[in-house]
View (cartoon, rainbow, N blue to C red):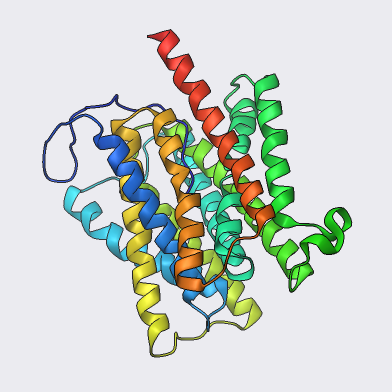
Length: 323
């Protein structure tokens, strides 16, 4: 749900893979913006499903994604298993890390305000830089360190720990809010790991195959946990079922448009557009949930968005120098 950092085809490239071929400047950025709308609405629907455990919501989201991904895989006769062993391992890692990230993110959406959860999840770029240094042997300098501190400051403002802010930033359930924030933070970490796996795979694996691995691992993980916890049940009749269907469709829409955005546009501009997800999240939180964002949350969002934009701008400047 957060932008990767792989460079794809430049702006104005030709679009293939949706049954058509067309070209115009800025299409990649339009796809990125559409993906933010889908992802933010997906987060809203997670929040609106009230009678199901977050793990079960994750299970149905993955099931809906799998149903949508399999027909084009069958039609295009896409290979689900890469030929070389390293690619198989990276694809398995992408599925496992992505599934854990999704579970933790959905737990966060259930337990803390929508805007807060989305903002913390968007701290993933700092972890992408760290894991890219650790796994891909990319450079990690003072800029990354400063951006990391800035992002962590934003996360602290959003989590509002009582030992720092006392009663000034009191929340109805401090322990639940802190646990939800930590879950969102963990989701950001595992999301970064998944995106580093995607970078290792490059363009060799079709995005519907990525969605399939994420969905299968997500269904297995959540089903095992739900059975162990005794929480699995059929969704009740009514609005929850419609929210689950909408959640699955928005998930597929978001994944599809984001992948196409990275294929059509440089990663840096796409990453900047993707920060609009935070703005949409706070907007939906106010319009549909009737929750005004706290001032500390808005301040934290500014810190996190600034860090994400700074990382994207730096990458853009480096790309221009190379050209």
